[in-house]
Length: 592
Ligand code: JFZ
Image (cartoon, rainbow, N blue to C red; front, side, top):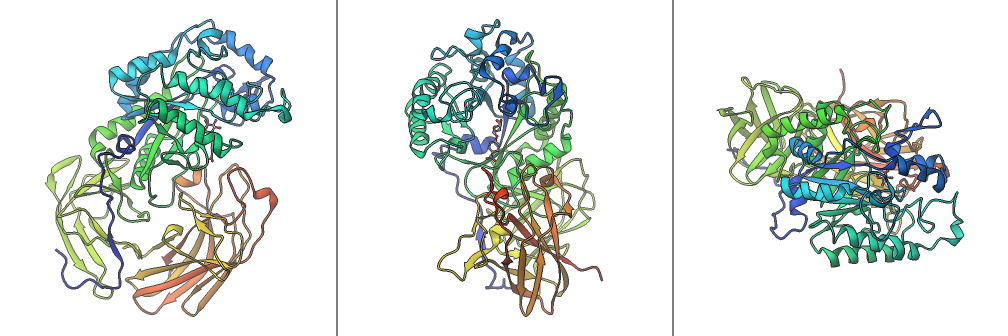
């Protein structure tokens, strides 16, 4: 048990949200892990067009090459997947530990992968296969106990004259979104929500031109036909039942509310015959843990080929994830995110009732220490060997009152890629909620832990739901942190910024950092990449800011403000506002 008095200045909180049985998201958040399937005509070209390999995601071929509708439709008579096996695909999802499945019923190319009575441009009526794969999946999902969900592109449609973004066949001035909804979207959603039994969710996508009114009308239709069917965040205008991050995005810390990251096993959603850059099973399992620790679902994709076959590397990786989940699944399914807002250098945490799970990404030291947990620990054991108990001791840091937990992992057997240790607590975890110095000396000052301030009437800068700063485009606003140091000394200061790897980096801004009587100024830069899971698609870019020396342990305040901004029009995209995409400030003990 803890000894001595806890410093009253340290903000603490019980970080486990009470689970409401009536929560419509409950089946989905408990599932944590789903299978995404992108399958359509684009599997025929498979990432090759006019003899050349295309560099972008395979299902965007028609748009990127501006292929006329009449030309693209020539794929239709060639679609005859002899190896399609719905039972095997649902079985693969189960073997992987994926408890819901989302398949493309209609992607942006406008081709329906099911028998659509309202539109003849569909797999049953237009191809020689003359078969409804979604009917197969509905049967198999019911039989095997996997939740069936449909992806539907409600805005972009490069086939229908009124769909968004085909401006090479059709005059944009003549497009009528209302007619598109009336002629295609509403009838097809009605078919999907009437003819295939209970549907767990409609996974809408890419709401780039749709009005709020139309997003709302679509939501009303879904809820009228199947009130329990969830609506994904990409229906647009904040009308989803949960929110989605950018593709393949890993947030810097714990997110609030329902969130999902959809991700690829290689670098494409639709099948590309030349994309062999498969992520490793270790990367995938670590990503699953990372996302679960932040309260984020992981929707991991396969792209069957034109014959309906699942690429062997995809299946192998999913099965490896399932093998890990068969041992450690209790630390993923039905869990809450970890109690701390920030990541830990050794791994991640999840919570279920009175159990705090420590997910180690590498063998922990024999003497392992955790800062900030108030709740009494009853016992400690590894999920892979529950009979073996590990010694533990709780105390308070004399200088700051921060609760400290020491664990003796002398005999812990580390099983790659992630070994899970369960802390059985006396109650749900209560932790210090402010940024705390970690036992390795680092202090993680991530954006969500900051208070936003301004010298203007009101700030423009805000902390996005995905944990990054948004609209940081002025010099009036600032971020301010309170944090606790257990060890005085000199620390290297690093500012971390990011961007989506296919979009321009908005950098070169001059930032001003103030802590005590010290002021540091530097221009953000993009030549120092911090390695790690997040950097694959969202490069984590380090800007060294110099050093800070702290004469005393205890609580400190640090402020970060833009002093000079470089705002370029080219940095404003559909997904980025061109401002500072700030991730965190890292304080790390300076090498003496
Ligand atoms: C969309 C599709 O365009 C793509 O083909 C695939 O289906 C993917 C899962 O979803 O791509 C997006 C949509 C939204 C964002 C990024 C990619 N976003 O909000 O950053």
